[in-house]
Structure formats: C-alpha cells, structure tokens
Length: 487
Image 1 (tube, rainbow, N blue to C red):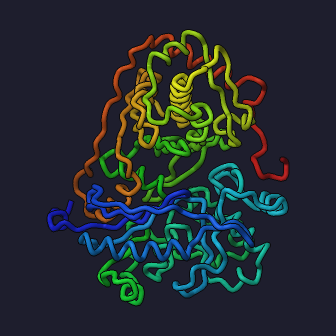
Image 2: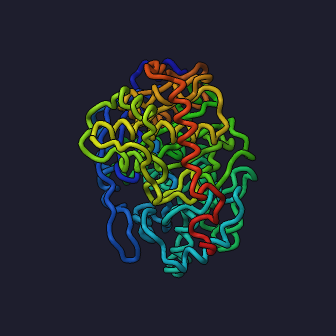
Image 3: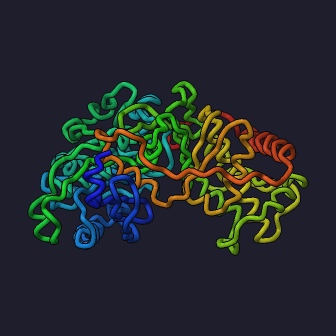
C-alpha cells in the first residue's frame, strides 16, 4: 500500500447507483467510510417507457460531489451500479441521453420478448437464462431500436450504467468487463468478445473501448468542474458492477477464490472457484466476471422479497428467537419456495410458495420462520456454487444475528464468516485506487457466527426435508427460459 497517500488523508468519492437508492460516499483509499450522502432513485412514467430521472440524478450528483469535496480531500471519483441498465447517448456528455434509460422492472411488449429471444445467443453469450421483465442491456437496446430506430441510428455510444456516469464526469467513453458480464448479453466473457447480437444488429459502432475498472479515464471535465465548483484536479476511474466490486473487497483482502453471499432484495452468490460446467441457467445460476476479467460463477434469487412474504409486518426491529426455530424443526413448520414471481433455484416455483405443517401464527413466529427460510435459501445458493470451503456473508440479512448462526449450522463441516459493513460495494470500489500498487492484503473485518444452541441433528433433518418438499409437485425441472417464444 502507498503509505504516503494514505497518510495525507486523501479520499475517493464513490458514486453508487442502486435500483432504489443512490449514494455518494467519501472513502479512504483502504475502503473505510468517511461520509455518505443518499437520495431516492426516482422512476418516471412513459412514454416511451418507464425510465429513471437522469437529469435529476445529474443535478444531485454534481452538486453533492462539490459539497463532498469541500469537506474532504477528494482526489478521485469512481462509479458503480447494478448491471441491468444501459444508457444510449449522443456525442455530447452534457446531453442526458439519446433515449430515456429503461426501468428494468417493467414488462416489455410481447413483440420485444418474442423478437429478442432467438437473437440472444447461447449461455456463454447471455451468462444467464433470459430473465424477468426488462432485464439485460442487449434486450433494452433491442427495444429502443425497434421503437425508435432513427434515434438509435443517430446515437454515438451505448454505455453500462457505471460507465455512463464516468462518461458524464470525464467525457471519456468506456466499457468494462464486470458490468458487461452482469448479464448484459452483450459480452461473452469466456471467449472475450462481443456477442453475436452486437454485430448482427449493427451495434458494433455503439460499443466503446474496453478499460479495466481501476483505470483512470482522465480528469473531470473542466467546464463541469467550473460550473459546479468541483476541483479540476479530480480524476475519474472506469468503475464497475456493484456485486463484483463487493467481491473485489474480499479478493483485495487476500481471498482470491472467495465465495461471497451478499443479501438484500436479492441473494447474490459469487464464487470464482465454481466450475463453469456446474452453472445451470435453469436454477438461477449466472456467469459473472471479477475486475481482472476472470469468469466468476454466480447465483441470483430474490431472497429479500421472499423474506418479506414470509415475515409479513410487525417484527421489523425485533431479532428472531432461536427457540422458535427449534420449535419449527420439531413440529415441521415449513415455508417453501417461491412466493414472488421469480423461480430462483426452483424452476417453475414462481407464485407457488406455500406453508406446510403447524402454522406460524404470530408475528414473532413469522419472523423466525423467515430467517430460517432465508438461511435455507442461502445454503441452497452455496451448494449450487459447488462451494464446500470458506463462505463470507454480508448484507442486510445480517441485521438479525440468527441468520449467520443458522447458515453456519447448516454447513457444519465448512467455515462460515460474516462482515457487518453496510458499505461493501463502496469499499470495494475505493480499493480499486491501489489495485496496481497494493503490496499487502487490504483490511477487512470478518467475524465467526455464534454457535447454534438448538439440536443440530434436528436442524439437518429439517433442512433435508425442506429440500425434498421444495422439489415436489413436479416443478423442480428444467423449463424454457422466461421471455422466450416457448412461454
């Protein structure tokens, strides 16, 4: 690590665009939070489709960045965000966009679904099954092209979400492997080439040069700096995919093959050691990338939404009671997937979630059952990734101590650790600054879960029965991917 830079208190600003919230944080170069600002990520109605308010985000970002620089010695800025967004832009970085940025949680027209599916390539091209609603940058660009062919023909670049904001800040267009590999359907990370749909649809001219996440693209645009009072010396990094940068935090800490399970709206599992032939697109498994371009096995399931369906309301601030979990394992009370519209790891299960056995009739019981259900889904993700070694847990599920305890108890022959930081993505993004100069592992705080006080044999038998029940009713089978013409 460059001790001189660390000693002078230099900071990096991390701009993190989530689906619901947006954060701008001042971080140390070794990934420690100094200050964070946030705002809601508003969605506007169409026409031509529901879209995010890029103009409003721009005003907030540039003004907040100026404020952050007044309070902290910020020298660099890096952008990160989710992978289900791309922005079509013209040549002028002062233009918000050539077309509004599509909200991925809306349903595309049936003609878009039917027309796109046969163009999407094989699993290595997609990196996933064809997912719900308007996911995938390639499908969004296809929708734009079908709806507004002249606007697409006049546009200059199609940029992943983090690189869009890096371009707005620096005027330098770029593409980056973790964002492209986050199921954009534009980049085959195994073959290291653009997917067939790019050339087939005439999009090659829209694809910007590839740069690594840690590369300095250039200084902030002088006119932008002067307009908002941002220091002109500020340099802009390429940036990357949020979950991949959270994984990078562990890799930078000396865990290159870490299996990381991040929890929130989604349970996101990522493991560089997962064999590619173990990836099953029909079980929510995906192919991602780390910041170096190495393929990374992954799994996605909407665990946060499932948790909410089971827990209901009334116990948000209360910790789950371990004694109630023991009661469930004794009585055989089960929550079984899937309650939402996502199959997750159980193909065909969407909307068929159910409870079995004696009911969990109080809010406290529902909360405990939800934590147990979340732990079982997590272990299912870990097993799908073929991981029998060290697993690191992080994210919102860890607000309840029983969650990590149950995951560890369900993996009795392997080690489970957890991290309680609520800013893992920002920390990983900040660590990019010293990617090429780091000589020792970056610091990270990992803890061991508390021991499970209940009957471990009963818990193991319960988990086995839960998996059997989850596979019943003939819905645990391969099905055509959602959004294909076979639906």
